[in-house]
Amino acid sequence: MVAKAKFDTGARGTSVDPSIAAEAQIGPIVKVVNVKSASMGRKPSRRPMAKAVIEIGGKKLKALVNIQDRSIFPEKVLIGRDVIKSNFIVDVEKSNLLKVKK
Image: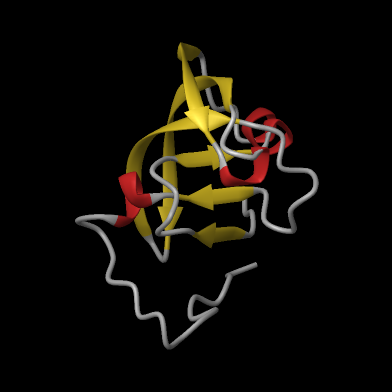
């Protein structure tokens, strides 16, 4: 499946909307963690975590993702530093470089 994602160097972890997680058959839930979120006013919220394989630009990466409602955001997947580090170089001068294959 293909989903629009946002790289967020300010986010420690990777987050996936439940609708995307269900369609991509991400799971099972392996643990539940407390996450502080800027969009939640830094109040910790409990989020389920599941193992996933994320493909970005032809590169398949294993990740532990949290499942969180992202319905208010245009991107249903947020790629955090846990996936970005050691896999990608971020150039803050540029945006939307990866073209989605349909």
